[in-house]
Image (cartoon, rainbow, N blue to C red; front, side, top):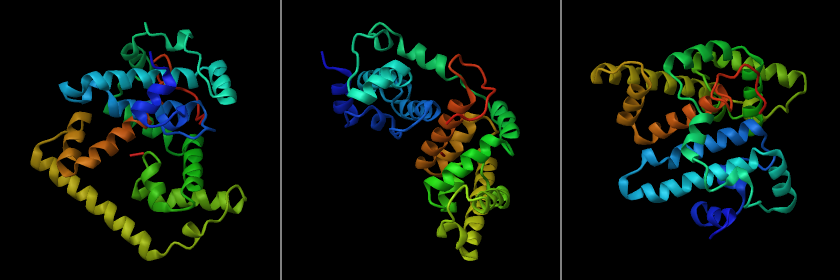
Length: 259
């Protein structure tokens, strides 16, 4: 029977567990959790055709085992130090119901949950940490930053820029040219693009008679551009992973750790 690492290589193209989840080797618990959720959503058996279900089930199980290893301190330490996985451990037992395990990790959230979380998130230390991290990751590129940070819309850009400017002034982050020397023209283009997308979305909602529930929003984005549906799935994955703890309840702490 193939080992976990062999299956990772065969089905995900890499022997590295971190690469399989699309996260850094230095990733903390929250980033690993978000990576698992995002990738597992892409291969979830409920999202593929009947012909693809057998392979999707196998990939889903593999991802569950990868996450189990990286979320267990002892197994993660062994893997990080030696590059091996204990195939006999309870964490990756063949008898585990991986679908049930996934459901326990990620509670399905509602639009009301999102709205409540947005109110709590904006202006919080968690949001500030996310903004600063995105600024560092994208070396000051505001287009990518605004696409990356949840709930970052064009109306909040002045506030977001102020957060970054204060961090630069305190020497918490470097003054990347992409940020400090960004032209007014680029800023105006970003605002114009955001306004056009918002107007188009509103018009299409009316045309299609859609409401504000998640399925309706997905249908709208799917109608507009198929790739945008994936962007929303990625956003929902990120939000659900941040919003829920391992027991499936709403998280109450601050961040430990895209559309």
